Picture 1 (cartoon, rainbow, N blue to C red):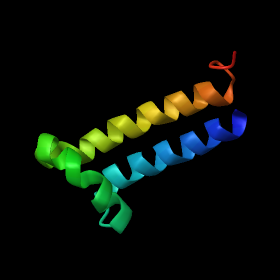
Picture 2: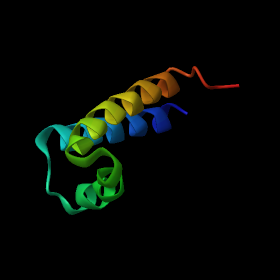
Picture 3: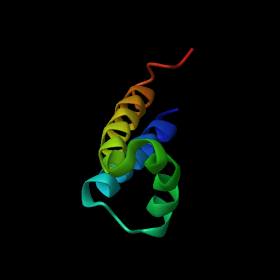
Picture 4: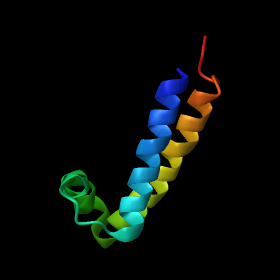
Length: 68
């Protein structure tokens, strides 16, 4: 579970980075297409906040909080 937690943290950091830099990378453009319909120009802020939430969940996974 630790490896999945570390991977989840990396994905969350990447999401936040893309949201902060308003990236034009093709994967980010695909990911932001649907939320942009609802969030409009605040879609980058959405990715910053959701990326940080994913980081927190990844840290909790890495420390084994969700283990049975």
